[in-house]
Image (cartoon, rainbow, N blue to C red):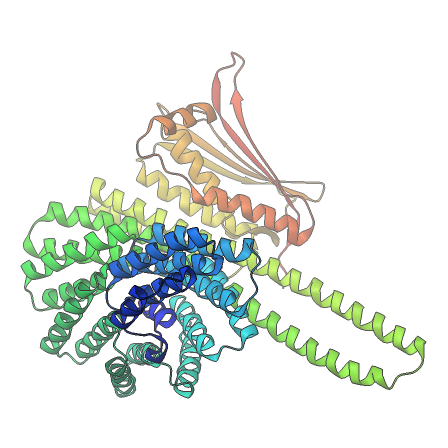
Length: 639
């Protein structure tokens, strides 16, 4: 995934050699020029000429162009200078400074309302550059937004060269969310346009295509496109692209079990990335080195390269690389017999994995958004075609009544389609919120198993695992459902509470009751109550001195389903104080997600859902626990 992000970078910045003069020849012209506007233009051209070879020189001449443009008040060249400085920081891996300079470039074009072709080209490239940064940081939704803005500008300018690069970037985003079918389609589309226009970026799309075929185990097709990419970079040198291609070739050799060949090309990749100070590419190279040496049981070499990759991934904030490094380091130390270090890196790996789960949820949401966006574009295209036909028909229509009738008919049809699309979007958002619940719930259970095994021994662990497997079976049975019967919810809660009783050594008792008037097919949103029960356990009865109790009751009143969770724990205020003083206080994402689910349910059904949390007091005004009351619209399972 990370490798494709790097190729996305190239897809924006490979420039045709016919459009880029050598720095030396430009410098000689610069020394002979006195015209201020010409000086700025030459300084920016020199900055771009250093792009593929020396980012520090690129930044130097970009800053000179910026200083000169401020003297002449040349807004276009000033925006260009900020853009070049930003790109140089991308190459060096300093994304914060890159974003600041790219933001400045974008603001100049927009605030000055410059609509010339040159200005719009600068704006589109700036937007694409920002899209690159967000892509490399796994922020796909933001990357998509900037790419689509850039694409609209290039479409208006009818710039096929840049459109091919945008297609490549869309392929990268689809690949990042594991949609290989659409990713491959966009890469092939980009490759075709680039060949048509003799664009050097053809080497980038070919490398992307080769990597997908490699993952699909189509080694011969993969080799064909990787060789095509190598030929492209030999004809149009670009160190960063070549370094990434060497990494791809190493993966090909690893797949063929040719480890010596893989190490040979990785050495080339290392030298190439070091020549342009490309830390992002080096992180990938070092991790591949570490994996190969680990496979060869050379633990010292594997440890050295894994540590290098981890340092870079921390400096650049690369979550996926960091997670893979931590897992490999844990395996290395385990093989070396250092259990303390192995456990430390395993914990770091678990932490990074949990964070990456949030990224995967974001990927799923983005995939839903992309599918919806595609369907919307198709509907708009069909509607446009219909309107064009209507214009032809209206040319032959004479009677005003017929014209008015057609107008109102099509307007009503458009309104119905808009309402339908809004409803579909709301349903997609509801499903996306539901998808966030299951990974969090499973992670908590796995953490409980790990804790119990460490504390209580084998027999109790076996009991715990048995109950956990039953709970997982129940969860899987209705994981695709937005609502389940109330009896299934009670069964899942019963199992979960028994697991937590074992985990906390019978620290609390519990009781679940259901009003006899409640029908068996009464529906309740899946796993809606579990986060509140979990909160009652962890922050209510566990911190309490002595035995705790949790009572869950389901009532039916006036077409409303009322769910009450009551505990005799330390209470809301004491719980907040404990969490404030705790270094390891955990922010429950599940409670926030449950709140959003309630809000979404209100939107979809147009019926209110109420949540009330109150602290219970005895006659002496002392805290005796907490009560959570959920009032839901009464619904039934549809057969």
